[in-house]
Length: 401
Ligand SMILES: *Cc1c(COP(=O)(O)O)cnc(C)c1O
Image (cartoon, rainbow, N blue to C red; front, side):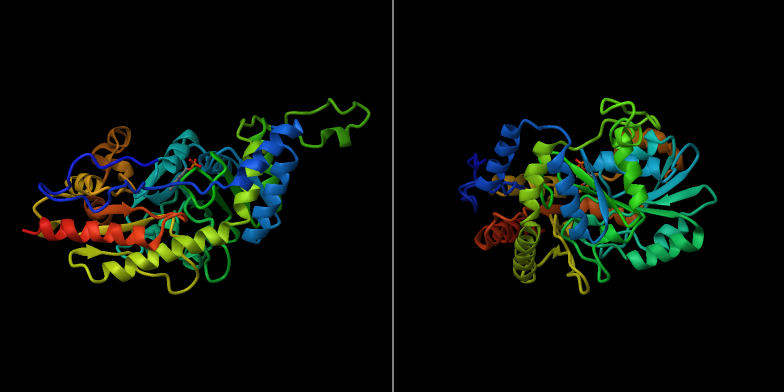
């Protein structure tokens, strides 16, 4: 995955990196490969023993009894909203600084996504922000643990309980995160995690729903496989093992055993991967503290940040170029970077959907104009992190006006 920087970053200069540093890269070792091959050789490829084992492993890691493995975090968000009873006319409150998965799934429930702003320091929603958006139509709060930083779950759950609302966590970034009182996946009514290739662990594509309520997980599992009765043959043994019943119209969102085999192997290293990310984040924060014109994410004082992302903000007011040109210049320095996220209400579909009714979300919008996500993943070295900081500092100096 290495390419050479094609041109010097700053005219007449030499790029910081000769070998391009990718923005993200999964950690796939020999054992990961062997486990998937074993599953292929076993002859059982679809949902089966490996998937059940994987669910059990994630459930005990999170601190719940049961979990439902699905094809993606998006699928998990969709099924959770079905099982939480979100439907036509309901409002779901969620941050605009988001990936499209959650608001898209809200719309597929014929419900209304209500976009809110974020706290400028944590970049997460707060109980106060959520509360201000609650109406008599509100059914669900859908906080995102942005970048892997746990939201104020105590405050959010207190708010939800006092208003009779449900809480669904978007845990796409947060598998390795810890809230002081436990894993975020054990606290909300439901949490959907992602095992997409860039996330804390990967199954290629994949996700899982966790909940403290085991019956809820049973329902999500059933919905993930057509709404089919599981173990029906036991209850209707006079009819034989071929028998099943459709108990409600479900989906085809199950995880398969090839994904789960990879997931099992990855889960063995989930804390190691998280700690590697923490080290890179600490190196960034240490080095960037010496650099003028950049805002770094504050550390987590209680609990653990999973550091799926390391988003900085550059003080564009002091520069002769904007964030987009800054990113192009970083790429020319041999540094892969990205932006998380384009605010939901900026996308053409949602711009039309909200129309003139969409108020300003000043923190989200200002953040978007200034933010850059730096590379952060387990196989990165501290030298790589130092190169990133060198490049950021070089461009800030060069383009200062
Ligand atoms: C990655 C991501 C998702 C979707 O995860 P999938 O497993 O690809 O469906 C959802 N929400 C956020 C915030 C994400 O970053």
